[in-house]
Length: 440
Image 1: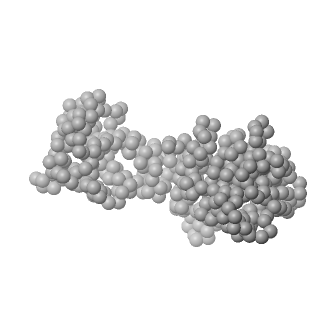
Image 2 (image 1 turned 90 degrees about the vertical axis):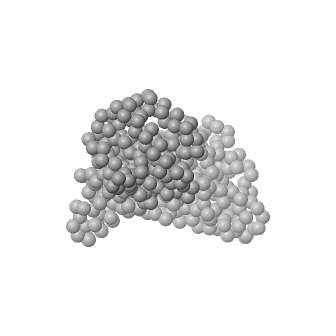
């Protein structure tokens, strides 16, 4: 499945520009060195091959050994493309590779760097060669295709190939001279995740909310195309995006600041992907002040939660459990029954004064996480044969992300998530089921 763009990444853009510059300006031998630098990081078992005496290079610029045979790479980067010369080279190199490497050769990859594509007869020749060598897998990588492989590499590997962009030294600590400076930078920094599916989120407001903390690099946008895909497809896109940023975070610090305006099932799924194994600070948009910054002055905030409907004693009967959480508005028992008629138990989590402005402090999120963790532990203890959890959540997106963090796919049964709409029946519609397949 293809993944939609995650937003503007200035470090990645710098690497792309430098890569394109090298492809445009480098000599044939310099492009081969660039290719080798990339392929060695894609697969450390790659073996570069150099001409030797009157033996030459056996029509091989590089070799990979696979379980079912060997892969030969042939690299071509002419200063000026000539169709006949290119056709002759492919013809000669492929025939020579088959002759020299014999039965061990299972795949031949033609890597080329040309400015505006190859002439049509070259493409036709490659098709003809596939018919001529049906037992051999023939492939071709353009410089653009090679970049897509570079782009997927971790930041550290890309920096080793293309350098560390000026102005982003904070990613590599090169501007920090003492241990105290590095420690302070790590303590104050975080990766910023922006999930703005329902409305655009101002990056200036994000920066103000983080102060005096600092972001590591550009914000990472989690934007699955949920309007064009079913829920499961959007969740899979989101999983791929978060997987990428988690891999990037391992190079620096696994701390995240999350700003979400998204449908509740996808906000919960985002927290589910992050899990409680990494440090996450969730922010909530304040409709009155139009800011993401938590109130600086002390305000009364409701940290009291009431949990009702828990079974008083353990049962070994198979059962499904519905959990309603009415933080922004109460959730009627009838809505729960209509959405999950197969649920044997209904557990309700409520607050004394639900409302759209209920969330005023990160302490409420901490307490919410504790309450949900205890609730899930109690369900596992008293309903050990629970087959499914039905979660109907009516609350802020910051709380939805925290809720998702508490759900461990290996410790809990499948968790069904519902999307609310006043105009549907039932008003809570099944959207997404959290299982190990949708986790990282």
